[in-house]
Length: 301
Image (tube, rainbow, N blue to C red; front, side, top):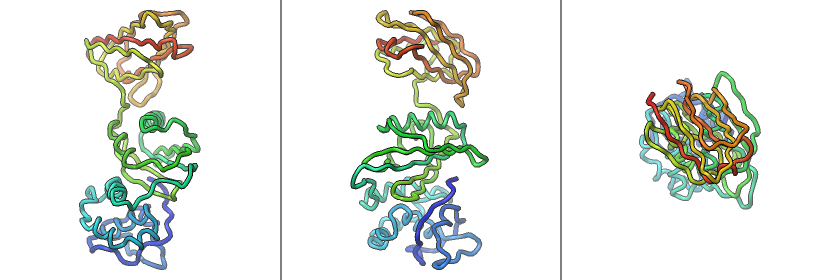
């Protein structure tokens, strides 16, 4: 779980009604002792939603748009998934109604922290691919922590606007992931708690007997090989391929590396049973296979 959320105040009364629900750690942290004492760590569902909205837009905007917010969030239950706030729907509603502003006046450095209980190596690869696919190629790892609560990865990047949580959610969904919570520490510090229990890399999956041909290769080619036993790889005749192939299990633990320091036109691989992904590249430079490769998978697992 994300460890903290710093907010200045919570309104002393909810905009809404009075059904009770357990208060999460991050929602509890938005309360100030002077304004509200919560007995037995409970708040109404309306108050919890109230606190989450406030955390995204700030007190000034909240006060200014109180009635408008009341209208847009009056159907409280629709913003919950069982007892958990559907935080992406909250963000989406705020965006659609012009209440959440993600743009800076000028390019700024800001931080994003991602938390998961999954495998660290897999999570970093997953998030790196996701960020790339929504247009973020340059960022710096600020910190990574692996403890009993899971794995946390913090990055810093410069942009004219904060990453759109709705866009990020859509891209993560293509990889089987779900955003559980978003905590806006400040305009330049956002935390995401991500469920990766059903996660997979967004790469082509090879099937026995079905050839795949890639005509232009600019990066190492990743493929899902969970269903096959072997692959025959053929290099385009204009290439100068010196194979560098890495085999990984489902958590991206490295199983084996195949490399050949001689020009190769065809290579057959037999895959260990636990192999889930392979990465195919060149020992020296990716331009050696820029004209493409053909994959002929065989054998069903």
